[in-house]
Each structure stands twice: as structure tokens, then as C-alpha cells.
Image (tube, rainbow, N blue to C red; front, side, top):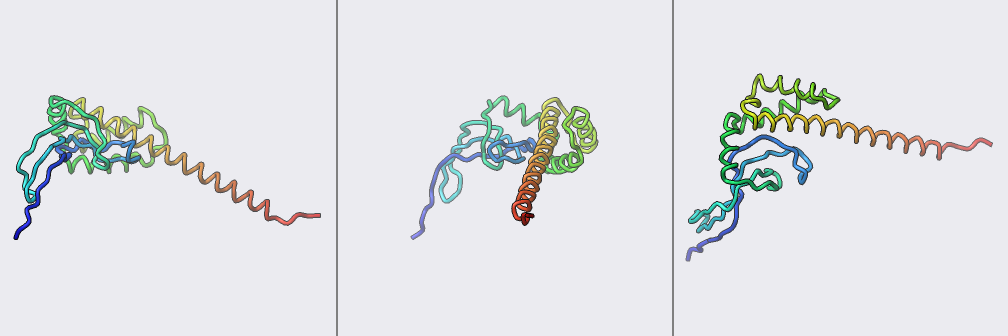
Length: 174
């Protein structure tokens, strides 16, 4: 006798990669997708019924996101059409590489990265993509500088601890 598997529930369907964005919940850069929250019923994992319950800009890592309207979803999907999913992934890697030697967050440095990236990728195709990628570049530079600051603090604390241990273990002269 065959077993019939059935079920139902909500599923977040990622429809369009917008790019990468800093996720406060994941504490790292993660893909940001235009997504639909879909209620579905299935029999033997074959969808029988689906109904869209909402539209979101969601993190691929943790599914945290912001609810948007259907009209906003359609507009953003159209706005991000010039940037394919694979192009967005490659663009993010190049942004990180270009930002690596930058040690100061300034408009000039952000503009420098934008000029370099826009020669290869359509990050300035429209105002929506432009502002998204300007924020991404600012976040990448800011996160890199913060990471360097924390590392320097940790190194200084370690050196102070080592110096204190050497002073404490040094033989006293009488």
C-alpha cells in the first residue's frame, strides 16, 4: 500500500536578486532578494494550490526583511532588471576587492568605487539601482574600517597583556 504524503504551509520564494546588503540579523553581507510569501498545499510534494500572501525585500540568509506592496514589488523588479543575478554576485565581489585598500569613508572614495564598477556593471542604470549600490559601497567600506579598528584594539590589548605578564614574571632585584 502506497503512502500519500501531503502538507501545507508558507514558503518564501526568492524572485529577483537585488544585490548584496548588510544584514543586521546575520551580521554580514547577504544577498537581498525581492520575494513572495506563498501559502501552498501539496500532495506528494506536487503543488496543488498556491496563494501569494505578501511581498518582501528579504535576506537570503535569515529571511528577515521588509514587507512591500505589490506595486512596489513590480516597480523594484522592473528597476533591477538591468542587473542579472550572476552579474550582481560578480559585482559584489569586485566592490569588495576595490574597497580593500581604502582606509577612509568619504564621498570621494565612494565615487571612485562607483566609477570603477560602473564601467563593467549597470549600477547606475537608474536611480533605484544607483542608490542601492551607493549604500552597499558605503557599507562595505564602513564595515572594513570597523573590522580593522576592532582588530587593532585586540592586538593592542594582547600586547598590553603580554607586557604586564613579563613585568609580573621578571625577577625582582634586591
